[in-house]
Length: 119
Image (cartoon, rainbow, N blue to C red; front, top):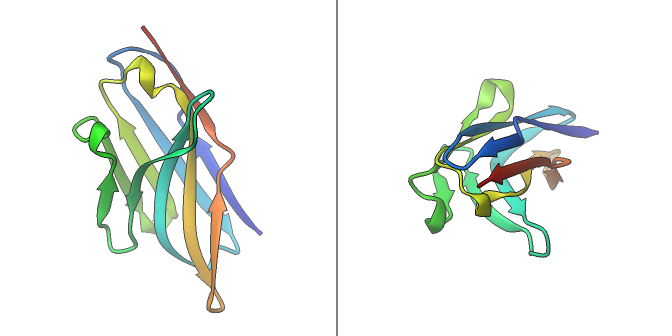
């Protein structure tokens, strides 16, 4: 059983900052890529940022300069630092972890954390 616990969401004014965290625990095995996705009301879930096991990052072009993804392998934790937040960043943010156990690949999702940016 794998658990992903997200934290750090909340209500913030436009221009503010938030830092999301997602910690994996349980029978996680070996972790590969970790990432953040978001889903706004009435829209499809979209990729925000992904960080590989080696630390390479991929960030949506529209978010570069405002969002940063990082990870702490010792803590099985991935972070999303968000600055200069805009109302259009309002969404439920989900973390995703790709991991391997006994040669089998798994993908696990967090329960989501709400980010609301007021204008």
